[in-house]
Amino acid sequence: MKYLPLLFKNILRKKTRLILTIGSFAIALFLFGILAIVNNSFNGALNSMAGVDRLMVQNRVSIIQPVPQAYKEKIEQVPHVKLVTWANWFGAVYQEEKNFFPQYAIDEANYRQMYPEFKVTDAEWKAWQDDREGVIIGEKTAKRYNFKVGDRVPLTGILWSPEKSWSFNVVGIYHADKPDEDTSQFWLHWKLFDERRSFGKGTVGWYIVRVDSPDNAVQVSKDIDALFANSSTETKTQTEKEMMAGWAKQTGNIGLMITIIGSIVFFTLLLVIGNTMAMSIRERFRELAVLKAIGYTDTFVLMLVICEALLVAFIGVVIGLGLLFLTLPGIEKALGSFLQFVFLPTEKAIEGVVITLFIAFLAGIIPAVNASRLRVVDAIRRV
Image (cartoon, rainbow, N blue to C red; front, side, top):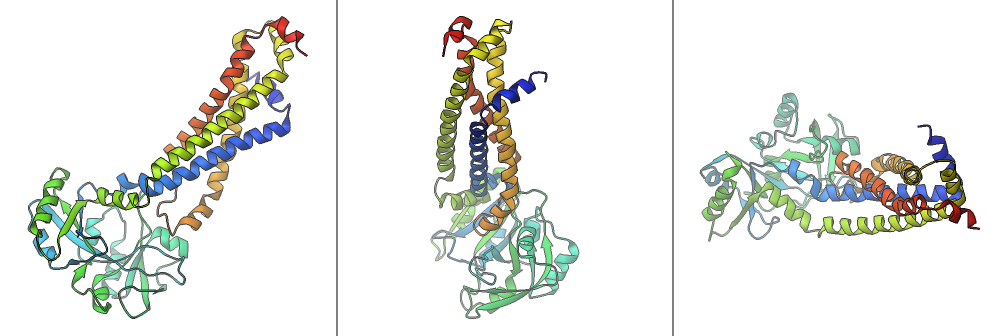
């Protein structure tokens, strides 16, 4: 700690250069955080969202093609199947096109049992069952649009009915224990949906199947698909995680894109900071020589230069993280319609900090080694 004033005095020597260097670190970490948020939204939450004992049964042609509702009883007879429920995409918007969130017409009997990670009180669930026009909304969507229990919510642009506007009563708001659980959904009654739609009656969008053990998931998937093979509506059964990963892949290899962009950013940062540190050391050859002349060791000079680089990086890290967390609510609001899990995982924040400090260390190590090997006579001779 006694050398901290010396470190600050050295880095404050060129204030403009210091500000620009700190800004480089801050912007690099800020960009890393944004990329991590986007990557997590597409891929990072798959492990926690997808139940290891849940299977998704859809039309073999496409998820947008329906599956007969009569399949439910047959699926229930497959060995190792514990529970079957279903859902259907509703496809509407709130007030204007940009106000989009996932809406599902769900099976009133078993959907709640299928997703115990979604927390809704017994009283709210009972109120929903008693109100045909009732809906239960996820915490995230309720917060975004300021929905409260008792509100009347109109939705427009319905795909399934000539009625362009449907209205629902908010009777409950579901929560989740983890930040990477999907609390953006909007649940309405399947029976109401099936009665009012003008086409597709008697079909469902997809089935969700719980098996007695994850070890039996592959066999159950094969048995279900074999059950409907060569029928007018063949099925494709896969684990919930596989289905979500397939949706994510439709947008391209996001992880690879983010890795490439992040690598370019940090490599550029390494070059910029390395050049800055080299300039700083060249300007102070005589001062470093004086330190050696009065008894300070080569190791001390080496550590002094590295600590300067790390100190500048640390200040940039603090500013970058501060900017990231300050702008996170705005990012969530801007991207909430497209990305359902807008948050920065703690491990990614730590990873960004570690990478940034490591870049600072790499940028400072060569100038530091050169400074430590500096001969006092040679340094004093320099003009």
